[in-house]
Image (cartoon, rainbow, N blue to C red; front, top):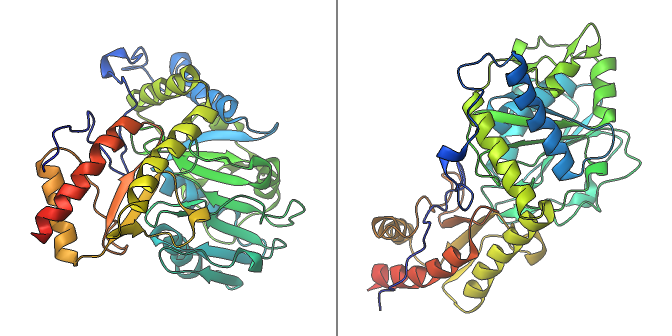
Length: 371
């Protein structure tokens, strides 16, 4: 029978993601609007966004947090263009964004000493092959594949190269071993449900040392430049952004950070993601027509949950349309480059009760396309 209960919030998009529970744009502190971001009021708000991020994430002493242009993509590109070339590179990819970084380093930066470790959607490459005397680039969580690294145990503590981690759908959702990560990037619109266009760049002291001791052989666009006269531009990590940010988006991000603090910090946002994944795990375990794209349970993402079905592509797409027309699930089709299926965002801003309400609708929609 057609379910009678619908999710209160049907927004399960993997980016931009659902706003936090109780979100109301009217509650944002908009005192910075209409003011220069370089005025004291603007720099204070931007500085708080950086310092509060570091505090909530529990970053080690000496780690810096900066707001940079162009979302997570811009932050990753800034890291690649500014830091690579000093050593050989090992780069890992098991979904579309990791594959994009391979294209950048081989075809744009044209690095010669590159070892590529790739795997199909649903799997991880062999992490044991990575050589940490070299720089290493990888995603923590494959947003388009639903596959994450299981932990940080495979990363050497005595590494000689830098670890550069695209963690946009992992930060605030998964336990990150910060002392093993030299560069981490993410964007506001993922786990915190913030707005787009701004990226976050986290640098370890080792990454700063590289920036101050190494000059890449290629020209750097202005929005990528993190040093001046051989020294780090510290202002970038204290609220003096490289270009003009949206102060409305900054106010929205600060609201999200306040929410994280109010529910008990990052341990609670991680717990919310884990609980959300458990809802879908129980559903999948009791049905033979649906399964996780991830082949290994230890690599199963708790944010971007990717599912494959035992029906033809046109029927999967029909299911997605039915669920949207019923206003029970928006934007849950698989990423365009991924295997056909469903992708349900289970990040911290999603309520488990909404996922519980959604599951019977998956049953119903599946029956509709097979009737």
